[in-house]
Image (cartoon, each protein chain N blue to C red):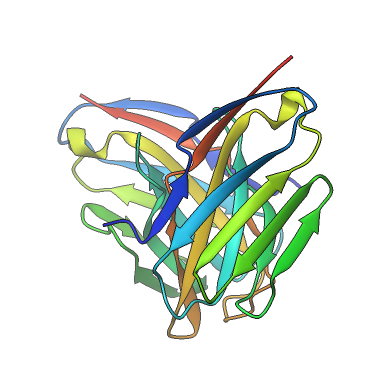
Length: 114
Length: 116
């Protein structure tokens, strides 16, 4: 069973609208929680990185929140653009030895229509 | 900086053939890793390295070998390709191998592999 669950699986919105993507995890304890954007046919690109002690992190129009008590994170996209059409992936990393091992969610596919 | 580069971009193999997927980074990063991405599944860690000469297994290491003779290069070897290894393979790197939460991880563009 995947320890990182993302919802919705896919989402279609109109350009200019806001949206929120969800990530629930059972991995514990964790070193950090990351959100990535992956364009079709490309590698993932880092959007935000949060430790368990942080509850919000912004990167331009992207804002990630984290509630370590409920083990939930969300990614809020403000004033969406056509270029936001992509898959958004939540990753929770477990400490392992001197490093950490990531567990990836399956992603939310976002389509922004004009 | 070129970042993380991968070659080839596409490859078709027959069952039983071997090949090496190349990965290089020019950012002097300690940590490098290989993932595979399959439809409907999250990326899964195959192998990783915390520095030259040091490698370890990830979640799905069977059928793959790695080595890290230099900081820059981290090749992934398929010993005897199987149809189950049809996937998109991503190499990634980040600066520090330790548990430092703020390190950005950079991914390569991927290699698309089809095993017939």
